[in-house]
Structure formats: C-alpha cells, structure tokens
Image (cartoon, rainbow, N blue to C red; front, top):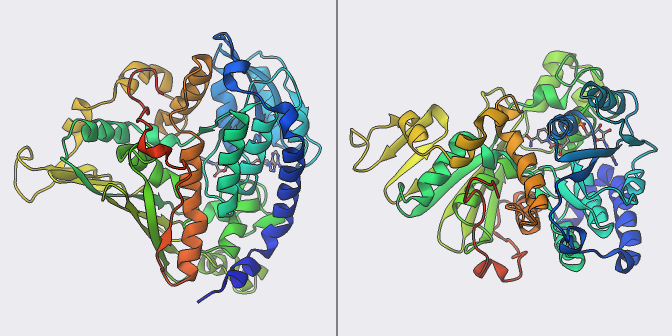
Length: 468
Ligand SMILES: NC(=O)c1ccc[n+]([C@@H]2O[C@H](COP(=O)([O-])OP(=O)(O)OC[C@H]3O[C@@H](n4cnc5c(N)ncnc54)[C@H](O)[C@@H]3O)[C@@H](O)[C@H]2O)c1
C-alpha cells in the first residue's frame, strides 16, 4: 500500500512543471479582480464572428485549426506554441493555404500564451496542449476574459478541479469541454434510444479508452508513430510528454472518452451525480516489453520502471443507482475499442461487434442482433442535419460537432452543453482513481463540483438540431 508521500514522490518529474503552473495560477489570482468579465457582457449583442486564438498547435491543435479555417464565422487571430520547428510553421502554412491572414505568433517558451491572452481582439481560445497545462491555461484564459475550449484528459490532482470551478464561478466565464466522443454517430443514436426508453430504466454502463498506444508513447523523435523507442526530450509529439504520465502514475489517465458519453446518457451533473469509485490496476508489462522487443534489452529505456498498470478498471456509483465501469487499456496489442455498453431493464447495446438485444423486439430470445437497423431508426437529428459538413472531419466526423457547438454556443450566447462542472467531474476521475489504486482498490468519494446545483440543472446536450 502506498502512502500519500509515496504517491507524491513518484510524481517528482512532473513537479517542476507543476511549480510553474502554480506560480502562474497564483499570479493570475492576485490580478484577477481587475479583469473579471462575464460572457453576457462580452457578447452583449449576438455576434456573427468569433475571434479565436489557439494555445497548442501540435497534431490535435492543427485538427481544430483546420476546422476553424473552414468556417466563415471564425476569425483566427493568434497561435501560441513554443515549437517553432514544426507546430508553428505547419500551422502558418495551413492558414496560408486557406488564404487567411497570418496568425500572430507567441513562441517564446511555455508561458508566452499569457501574452496571447492579453490581446483585446480575441474572444475565445482553444487549448490543445500537454495534459499538465490544460487547467492552468484555462484558468488564465477565464481570468483574462477569454472563453476557453479545453481538450480531453484527466487532472493532475484533485485541487485543480476545484480551482477551475472556482475560477469559472468567480469570473462568470464558463468553458467548453471538448469531449468529441459524445458526438460519435452510434453513441448519439444510442443516446436517442436511451431518451426514448428503448432500454427501459438504465442500470449499468461501460466505457473506456482501449487503444494500443505503444507507437504513440514511443517513437524515433521525428515522426508521431513508432520507428523507435524514445520518449521525453528525445520523443516527438505525445511521446514527448504523455509517456511520462505512464512512468510516474497508475490510474485511469484518460477517462473522458468513455465517461463523457455515458455521463450524457445518465444525466450526470443534471439530475444525477457520480458519488464514489474504486479502481484496480494490473501489473505493468506492455511498455517494458515493447521497448525490449523494438529497442533491445540494452536500450536505456529498458531500465525504466513504468508505474501504469496495463489495464486499469474503475467502478463508479451514481446517486440514481446506476453503475459505470471504465477501462484504461493502452499498453497492449489489441484492436481499438471504447468498450461501450449501455444496459437497462429492457435490454442492452454493446459497441464491440455492434450488438444489441431488446426484450420484445429482438427476434430471438437470449441472442444478440446487429445494431444496424436501430442505428438508422434512431440516427440523431444533429447527424442528419450536419452530415455533409461533418464528413471528412477528424475521428469519423465527430470533431466537426465539437468546434461547431463551441462556436455556435458563443454566437448564440447559449450555455455550453459540456461545461466546467463536467470537466471537473470527468477530469477528477484520474487523481481519484490513482489514490484508489494506491490503496488497493479502496472506495473513494467523488466530490460534487456543482455544490448541489446538479439537483436542479437540466440536461441540455444535443436536445435539438443546434448541437448544444
Ligand atoms: N479528443 C481527441 O480525440 C484527441 C486526439 C488527440 C489528442 N487529444 C488531446 O489533445 C491534446 C494535445 O495532444 P496532441 O496530440 O496535439 O499533442 P502534441 O504533442 O502533438 O501537441 C501539443 C502541442 O502543445 C505545445 N505546447 C507544449 N507546452 C505548451 C505551452 N505551455 N503553451 C503552448 N503550447 C504548448 C507543444 O509544443 C505541441 O506542439 C492532449 O490533451 C491530447 O490528449 C485529443
């Protein structure tokens, strides 16, 4: 069993980044009162265009850049990223290709994004940086009066989940949580089925991140996938920073792709809430074995002691009596699957093998049928309306909806469908699961980041064709 101190010690390498982030947060808190702004003040009149800055224009940031450049209602003003070798020039090349005005660059180190935030011609920022930067950058944005959209991950510690809720409440600026899997076509059709009672009353849901990331966590420092077993300073893209989380942490490091969609189906933070979890982890084998098989037993990385268990399983309870199981499985050879299962009193759907069973409707008792006919019948109106625009966008089209929802919500002054309370709750799974794993699977309470507001908040995600 690990003590609190043991857990802290294993995170030593992340500590210098954390120190810088804390410093930035404290500095910003001190000057916050003068810069508090409210979105309703910012957007007193409905506006046709949103002026955007991008913080982090690596592989993911450039997906968002591309989608922004395709929109007439987005004015791309500035980009912040210290990588002047590839991220910045490749972004400017994309901007030029679309015939748009060159973006103003902020490239002087990790904190130059603060200067981007000082501009008075930016309304909103999209944050696609390494995980440890998401919350400090989003807080800085809110305190500078900019509306942040934040990429997915888990929190570094529980306190930062409270910090971001407090920042949103004190500034009056919410944020948009960019969980793209909530917009996956089959997931939205299943949400439709849940809302129409096809599965009866919900009982049990599963989701997860089951993705063989060995070629993402290691590469040759020149390309994003494979070709070598380097990481950290010698790695490229996510191998530069993501792998370190597998060296020092053991928990569900990437909970939101699995949790976001099932949270929407169970109305988490809107009439329901997550109350407690327990996590267990297998031994760690996959990353070490990969280094040895591709780089040899004498490669220095063969000596690294990876803390992350190959498969981390988290069981969550809700106020309304459902159970949710999340899996994090990124170090082993396996086909990609987000492991969805949505089960109620009348039947269930499973992502793997597109299988469904509904009592009284499925032709044969005790037997799966293919979900194809259901997917057509319950196709969500958002997909019907936006299919042509979404086609070609990343991850089977769902990335289009994330940017669309963010920009349209700002233009219409509508609340975000995935907001700061969702981000805090979903991100919190990571540090809470780390603690549970360290304590042998002991049950941990999940805080109510809404401070009781969940009882009166109503579901708003994808209720109509607008995509809120
Ligand atoms: N939703 C999805 O489907 C999806 C897919 C891929 C990645 N992601 C997420 O997007 C985020 C970025 O991932 P990525 O694949 O683009 O990684 P990446 O390493 O390719 O890009 C990260 C970029 O951030 C820059 N950066 C680092 N520190 C910075 C700072 N302080 N200020 C500004 N820029 C900084 C880096 O130089 C790099 O260009 C991660 O949170 C990742 O989990 C989400």
